Structures are given as structure tokens and as C-alpha cells.
Length: 128
Image (cartoon, rainbow, N blue to C red; front, side):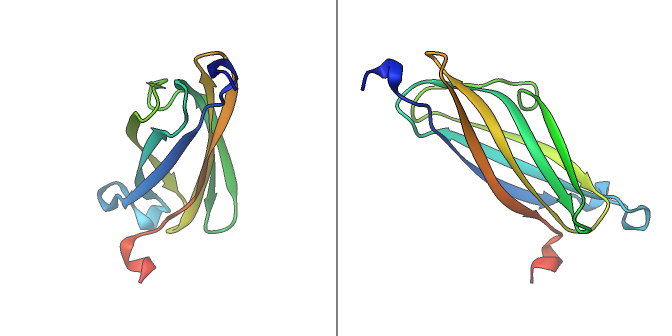
């Protein structure tokens, strides 16, 4: 297989932090920050171009968020490089989940996708 035929491969991990100072449970506002680390685990340079998130609240209602870039960046990652960013989300319920997909492109214009597995949005006391 030539480098031109190599597919891109990114892997992702997510850390979540409850934001009590930006939450107002009486008003149905529960805020969370999430930090995503993206690592190029493939053999070719790739660029993250767009993202899609599915955000599900505690009532099972799902909202889809799509857009170009992540926090204003379309990072280009060579093999072994990583990019980390932090964003936030608000829910109407104290707990929920998120999962998503990053749409990427290799340096040779081959499209590939990177799934972000489902992760929990919950205040620390809810997980014990």
C-alpha cells in the first residue's frame, strides 16, 4: 500500500467537568465542560474538518449539533501528534450523554471519520 492509499486514523478521549457556577438547577440549567484529546494514531497526516455531536438529556431527548471545525480550529495532525480543546454544553436535566463524529481528511484528500464514544454528563455526586 502506498502512502497515497493509507487511511487516516485518529483516536479520541474525553474528560468531563461539571460547572456548578454556570448551572442553575431551579431554572433547569446544568452546565458541563468537556475536554477532548485527539491523537493521530495513523500513518498519514490528517486534518479535522468538521464535527457532529448528539447530546441526549435525562428525558431521552436528543439534540444534534453540526459544524465546521472545533472551537474555531481545523487542526492538522501528523502521525503521533495530538490536539486538545475544551468546550461546554448545557442540559435541561442534571444528567445526560454525548457522542459524536469528527469528519477528517488525509493530506491526500481521502475522507475518514473518527467516532467519539458516548460519555456521561453528570455531577460528581451522581456517579457514586
